[in-house]
Structures are given as C-alpha cells and as structure tokens.
Amino acid sequence: MAANNSNFTCPNVCPNYEKVVEKPPEYLEAGMSRGSENPYASSYVPGQIQPPEKKVYPAGAPPKYLPQPTDSTSGDILGMGPIGPWAAGHLDWTPQAGTTGVRPVVDKYSITRYSTGEWRKHNEYILTPIATDKAKATDINSRKDITNAFINLDNKQADSNKKLEKRVKDLSYWKKRVEETIKAITDEINTLDEDRTRLKGACRILNMPEAISRECLELRTNRYEPDLVRDDAEQELIKEVSIVGEIRRVFNNTLAKVEEQMIMNKAAKTSIEFDWSDKMVSLKADKRNLNLTPESNLLLYHPGVARWPENATTLEYWEHFCSESIRNCDEVRIKSENLRKDLSTIIAKGSQDMKLQADRTNYALAETVSATEELCEKLEENLKDNLQKIADVENLIDYLKDALRKVDERAKLVMTRLHVRNYDRPNVENCRDEAQYALIAEAKFIKETSESLCDKIREAESVRSELMKYRGDLEKQIRRKKNSRLNIDQDRLARVRAHMPTPKEFAAG
Image (cartoon, rainbow, N blue to C red; front, side):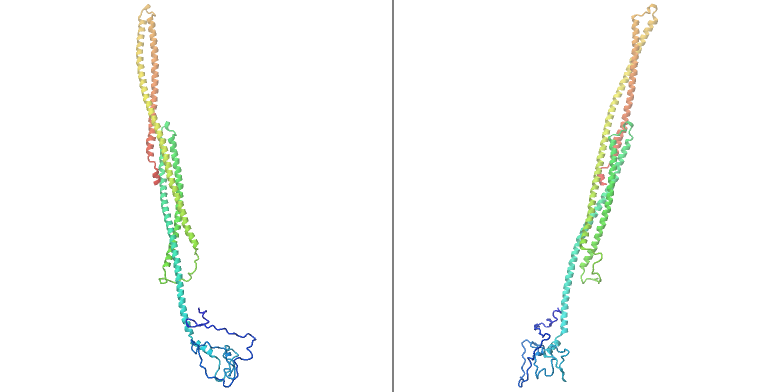
C-alpha cells in the first residue's frame, strides 16, 4: 500500500485530495534550439506599468501559501527585458535551479533563486505532517495487518483444529476396529485354550479304552486250550487297540498344531496390542492438542519442531499399516477358528469311531457268548442224554448179570444132572440116550449163552466206560465253557467294558 501511494499524498491523511493529472513536460531533444527570440521578451515602453490587479483564485482553491492550480515552475513565463526578474541575472529558479553551472547572479543583498510556486511547494512540504501521517498510516496499516494476521491465524488454527478433529475421528475409528480385533482374537485365544484343554482331556480319556481293550485281550488269554481261539471278538479287540493308537496319533498331531496356532495367536495379539497402544498414545496426544488454546497453561517454546521427524510415515502407509495389521490378525484368527473346527470334528469323529468299534467288539463278544451259551445248552443236553444212557447201560449190565446168574443156575442144574447120570447110573444104564444128548446139548447151549452174556456184559461195561469218559469230557467242556468263555467274555469283560468312555465324555474332555 505504501508503495502504491508513494507518488502522491496518502488519502487517509488528506481525504479531500484529488489527484491532479498533470501533463508531462516536453523537453527538447539534443541539438534542438528554442528559437531565435524569447516569445516573452519585450522592450520597455513608458506608461506600460499597470496598477496592481487583485488576484482571483478559483472557488475551492487551497490557501495562498499552498500550491495553486495556476502555478508554474517554468521561467519561460517571464519576459526577458530591461525590467523584471531577469534584470539582475540569469536563469536561477527553473527546474534546473541548483544545478552546477547555472548559479544565479549574486548581488550584495540576497540570492534570488526560488519561484513562488516552489515556495508554495516548500510551504506545503513543511506544513504537511509527513512523520505524523506516516505514524498514523503505520498505525492504521499495522492494526489492519495485525487484524488480518489474527484473522488468518484464527483461520489457520481453525483449519488445524478441523484437521486435528478429523484425525481424532480417524484414530478413534481405527482404535475401535483394533479393539474389536483384539476382543475377537482374545476370545479366540480363550476358546482355543478351552478346546486345547478338551483335547488334552480326550487324550487322557483315550488311555482308558486302550487299557480296557488290552485288559480284555489279556483276560481272554486265560481261556482253556480248546477255547483259546482267534475269533471275531479277538479280531475286534485287536482292531480296537489299533484304532485307539491311530486316534491318539491324530490327537497328538492336532495338539501340536494347536500349540503352534496358540503361539501365532498370542503373537498376533501382541502385535495388535502394540498397535492399539500406539493409537491410544497418538489419540491422547491429538486430543490434548485439540483441547489446547492460546490461553492454555504450560505452553512453551520448542525450537526446531516445525519439521518432519525422521521416522515420519505417509498417510497412505499409515492407513495401509492399520488395515494390514487388522487383516493379519483376522487371518490368524480365521485360521485358528478353522483349526478349532477341525479339532472338534476330530474329537467327535474319533469318539464316534471308538463308540462304533466298541459296539462292534461288544457285538462280537455277545455273538461269542451267545454261541457259547448255545453250546453249553447243547452240551448239557448231551450230558443229560449221556447220563440217561449210562443209567440204561448200567441197568442193562445188571440185567445181563442177573441173566448170567440165571444161566449159571441152569448150568449147575445141567451139570448136576449130567454128573448124576454119568456117575450114578450103573453099567449098561449109563447109555447115550436121548436124554443124555438133550442134557449135553442143553449144557452146550447154556455155555454158549453164558459166554454170550459175558461178552454182552463186557461190551456193556465197555460202553459204560466210554459213556463215563464222554460224561467226563462233557462235564469238563461245560465247566470250561462256563469258566472261560462265559465267565470271561460275559462277566469279567462286560464289567471291564462297562467303563468304556462315551462320545460325550470325549467331547467334554
């Protein structure tokens, strides 16, 4: 503003000032001449002097001591005659006044040098309060500049506050998302820890069916020789032990994966918590900055802070880092959730397989017990028939012995008769008559009958011995079946396998 008004008086000091557009002076070029004579020069003529004329100034003209619109600083308006300003010397108050070589003629009284216009201009310069006007202008400009400066400062501060408020909102948004992510990963860690505990419990519970299966196999080794067979129940028990081993291997592998996933979950949680801590510190700092005003306490100078820190990042990288941090944590959490689903599936299917195999084993044992019971019933029926046969054979033997006694009595009778006839008939009376032939034939028949009865008795006794042996075998087999198969498979194995864990116990851990 001062530069624009340097060519004329300040309008704030002279409000009624109207700029006078003056025509620029025209100067002769080098080598040109004014002419042979001065147009204003005139010769003196007596009686030419006129009485004084009253000067008339236009309306609204400034005071007489200030420059007038009719003033001129050029000496050409004055004639160069015997009287007038030129009488005492030469050019001395033109615009070139003061230039070396054009000094006026000096008389003994004064130096005539300046024109009236210059005098008035000098008066205007003296009367014009330049310093005061400058002070007022400076005051006005300073106040205006200060007002504008504070308006700009307020605008800048409002813009900074607006940007800080937006930054606080952005930080609050990301902090909320990070808190949600932390809560989700924390819940996932707790849930995975519960599932890990459940899996460890399932591994411990798995020792029971293995011990039960092995004990069942060991108990079945106490069976007697004929019943020591590799039947379906034996096959199912061996398969049960194998399934338990496979399930334990799968459980242990899954537990190792869970332990590794737990480490990844805790690492992700630690990373996202560091991010949350940084955001909390930044949010607290920005909120404190947002609440600061020029009237706040503890405002200090911190030279050199108006610069970018060495570790400063771009806004795009910050947003990328925030989203990537949350995405990485979510990826770890989703992987953990999938592992938990696999873990639950493994436990459920493993317990289901154990239950199905236990059912198969129990079914095979039930089939074995049922077959053994049927066999025992059949053996008992055979034993009952055998006992009846033994009784019948014994009755037969008694009958044969009784018959043999009767035959022996007949033999004694015949022998007595023959003895009497042979030794008691004298001489010719001891003849071979028909009675003698009949008695001899009777004796022979009795002897044959006696021998036949003895053979029958011996055969019956042999049959009775065989029946008695078969009876012993039946009784032994019945006792063995009841002691080995029924007692072991039905009673002892049933009591042991009654403690077989259920799928609910596996799921509960």
